[in-house]
Length: 280
Ligand code: HPA
Image 1 (cartoon, rainbow, N blue to C red):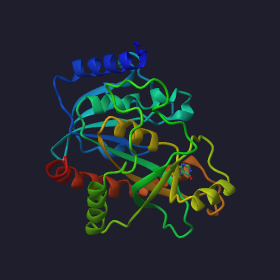
Image 2 (tube, rainbow, N blue to C red):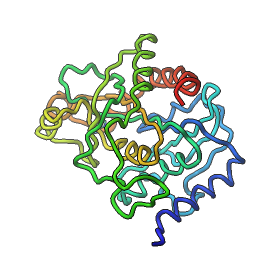
Image 3 (cartoon, protein in one colour):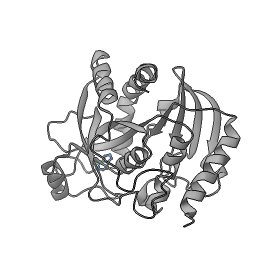
């Protein structure tokens, strides 16, 4: 059967390749909401707007850019996706993960995911960084639903170790060494775009979640399907609804992300050369 999604994916990969002159990223980074400054010290060699690639979704969230940046982060060949595609924007779930698959097929061996999230434990200190050790995606469509192009991966891929144990451990230990307050935990992905109700927050805590957000887990699944390693860091920017004393707003998320953007950027820059040298 001709799989038109697979054909679109391959043609997107070829279009991007034609713009980056043989550049081969080792690591792919997704910078989440308000986390674009992660790439501020990147030595950018190629900047590829999604709008220049036929068939690519573009990010409709205000303040989010829509481009791939190719270059060197602390010397490591990296592609950084500034402007993630969210399911709540109305795209098909397969299109939400299209840019992830493109970065993996361009050669990235590790996908490093970042995001903002709400804390499910009342004792969470806000804001703080959490290394994602596992996820819950039960209330979100699986990105592998639909025909499975065998060229990409297995029909029933194993998800018992989505987030690479060694790389996640390195991120956690390095953060501690750098005096960055760090936690580790389970991230729950919901669709958004509304924030959760207090009852939903209580439920998510009870089923084993530590933080909740509107991205990331589906991207991790798409990368693991392709056999690419995954790790993730969440910026817990607020306590979940009902635990938080405040009304939840995007403004609070952006402001509190701003308070720890320096920490996550420093951590990623310090970690990349070690990961590239020892783990890929
Ligand atoms: N819920 C969902 N997504 C989020 C939150 C939240 O409380 N904070 C930041 N992203």
